[in-house]
Image (cartoon, one colour):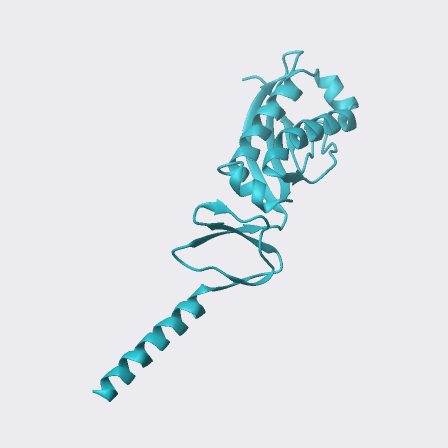
Length: 186
């Protein structure tokens, strides 16, 4: 009978050790873990290093703090002087506050991409082609400030960038690598 209780005690100890080992989460230098305890957000994100996440009570959402590049699908815009342009864009962003990025926005990457598409079409559509060529820095700063203002709830930061012309037939913007290409009417 004594050996049976010893076997049961050993099984309990092994189960507890396995549970504790499975609760250890290792976060890389570039990651933070947003932890929800019984559905409530803990005040600070954990990481880098070891974080204890106890399975039925805690849930962890990993957030990368590395800079991400988002490709904006090609957009057709018409400038104020009725010139049709095809716009391709790449946006560079990184998360500053992981707690806000997880709690305040359902998908901060998708939201930033969609808002960038809308802003790009809106701001460039208000300009004439000549203004796009001659006031690039001013337009770039306007795009940057609009996006920074509207992405602050998700605590993302858009990395500043420059834009430049490629050839005489093309118009290039780089707003995080945003490229405009003139499209001739068909």
